[in-house]
Image 1 (cartoon, helix red, strand yellow):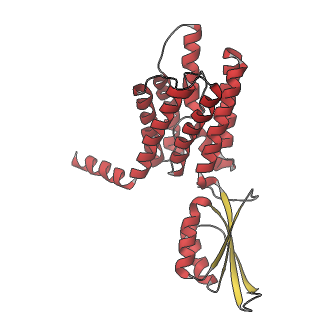
Image 2 (cartoon, rainbow, N blue to C red; image 1 turned 90 degrees about the vertical axis):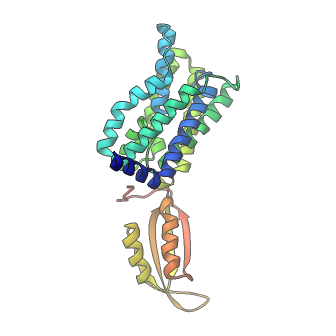
Image 3 (cartoon, one colour; image 1 turned 180 degrees about the vertical axis):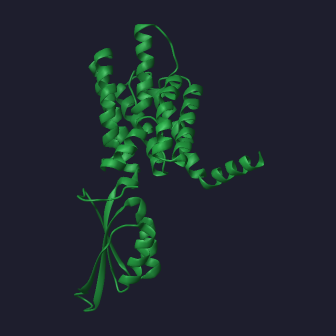
Length: 291
């Protein structure tokens, strides 16, 4: 018993920021659904949107009133099992916390519209949803649902999580359009697009950058970078400064934005005088490990 309690406390200590991100997602997701999207009959992304759609379909055709949180938890169950085997235990445990958090806050926050404008509902509902999802991705786990599928596909194909999620959500939009009218479906597209845009901006692990370092300590820096970041490097030992006339070397590498902080620390610890040029990378061809 004490051993289990100790493991739990160790997990909380090691991943308290991730747990906070999961709780933050639960609150933002519930606020977006209960105050903006669900009252306007708009949908959020992924399984949450699918749960909303099921609730509305049952209410429309069989007059059954079922809560969103019930379907949200039920639909996530098989996907959590998939995550356990494909994405790891830590990822899955944190994802379960985010799912339980969202279910809880959807249950306790009452359905109460704060605007009657569907455009405002779609924009700010999308922002709230995307902020929570993006923060979870940044800390290395998902909010469950189609995010799990999107992350598996992203690791296999290199496509961004937002792109994959948007493709999955097309099914929800199509069903909603044929059932409840295309005007609301179009507003839903706006909401999901904004959600995915916010996710892609916040999920810096999938944003690529090219870093070029000019230094007199090319071997020492390259060895530390290879050891710590596990990224390929291109070295040039034969450069010359036009102003100083000094011989200098360069290191070029493609990183994710998430790795930039660590790379800069490594470089400047070895050579505080190093010059670092950072450029956004629009796309790459060839092997790049996103894990």
